[in-house]
Image (spheres, rainbow, N blue to C red):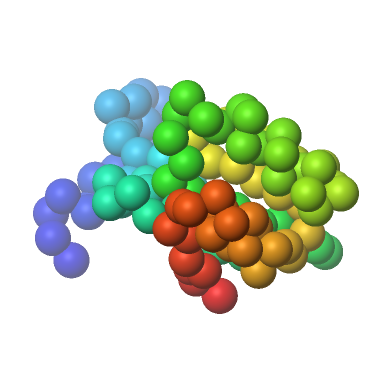
Length: 112
């Protein structure tokens, strides 16, 4: 293990917490990977407690809210758009990829 991975993050002794600890590289604050800047929209599936969620990466920030609203209407379920990621409740990956393809956007299934 390299020295940069051996920093102390928590201790029961006072004053031993590293307040300058940064988020892991390659991810956002909430653990979603940062989308590559290649113009491809990626649709992944994540487990959420007892259910699943479809996660959409790579949608331009200016289109995030309108795309999220359209996808929620398409799938007939709830969801949210935050931190550059659209989360749709349930496993609707194929339907979402087909929706983007019908609009001329490149979308791929990602992950499991």
